[in-house]
Length: 603
Image (cartoon, rainbow, N blue to C red; front, top):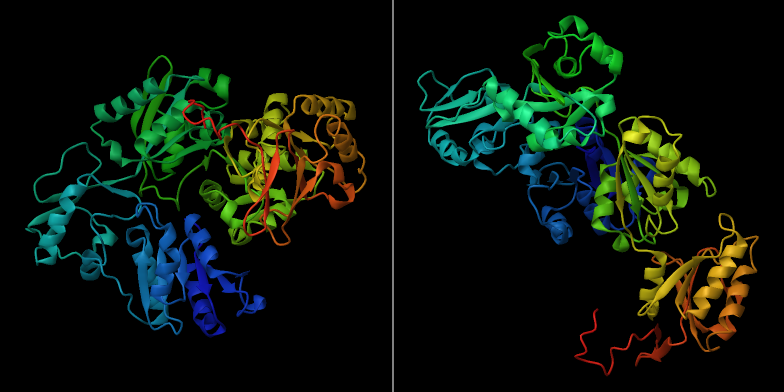
């Protein structure tokens, strides 16, 4: 879970926020207009977009704001209660603490901690929580309820006065009324059996499932082996808390398929760590050691995950292409005690022109998941509150390869990393370089095994076109006028070809501080093939302060009106302008729809 954010709108709430911060290990975000930046960890301008961005990123929110106001601010993004983070409203004077959202995702517990620190009672309204301080249908992390459909009835029995037979010592059940002859049973069991009548059957997720396999082993076969190993031992699949293996298997599809099936994390260990488990192995192998540097994979990984106080309870089972073993840890696995390291992930994200409104929800979620943010400093700054609690790795322009290599190597360490690009990550941006470096080699072995997610963004040409009307309504192309990476002769060839083919052309990198002649060349070539009245869109600072969009005739295009932050779109010979009643001029390129209804043309 992300670090909680304590949200304050006025200095009067600051003292309460400081007290809460120490209890929940959070950070304070204050409204820029009212809170001194020296007294908070982060300042924001507009509370609505800020709190919605935090919510979308899965960040627990403790807001010193009226509960009604907080509900209205979050209303536009409330959709799926299964994925919502904890949201708690706290009175500015600390006199009330109300969990609003995510009650079974930690909000109730978080509210209790905050209330205890403020010496008040949290206003928790769920029946089980009110009576016993626990919701039986939502056990704490590390436990799974095998028969959730029975929870409502059994909770009703307990609320009505029944007692429970509790089969093991579990602190989280301490407030449940208990008796040896209790009417209902609350049972902890790793064995593969069905619940009895009037019983809630909980699986402690303390089993480590160790796996080894050949490269590209069929995922279905590896999963079948895992399920058979559990079944033969009489163990419940819900008791598995982690799937583990050797680090060279970090990108093995079969391993991830198995972990996804069990809905648990997949973690890996290096060969040295696994080989340290050799004295505890039931089936050490010199052949395996010669191949991968450890005397066992499945058994060793399971034992390494279970820890020195854990035990191997199922020796290695094997097929022609895979091995499986099971160890039991003393305690259930949770996010706080996961062993080994995860497979690192690289999120290559396009944030659009930089405006919150033009950033996709997927990109916002991926940035929220990332621990590290890598990018050009301006692009990271445009993320605003999403950079809070993240590790920033700022790079200047001109060090694109260093930037991408750094991001990939960070991910190779097991981190979740967002490589931040403006516009769309795959259009004149860093996504291409990611795959080029993978193809060329030279990265560490770990960096070659990372997960890669590329998430699209609104490109500059789309943003410019939308602001100006619909100039991309028919065939178009993009050409970068920068000769830093592309020979000028090649650029000239492309400009001439696009001019002769009558494409609408979006010019990226039209000028720079030292380069002023390429756009003039392109203009002159285009004037040989299309009218001087052809509309040209000049769009600067799209979606940001200082946005400026102009439409000028091609014959009057002045290079001095264009800077490094300007996108230039030149219409085709068919492109037109039209003035609406409010006096605004729009550019568009007709495709031929008007007057041709019913022709079956696609859209």
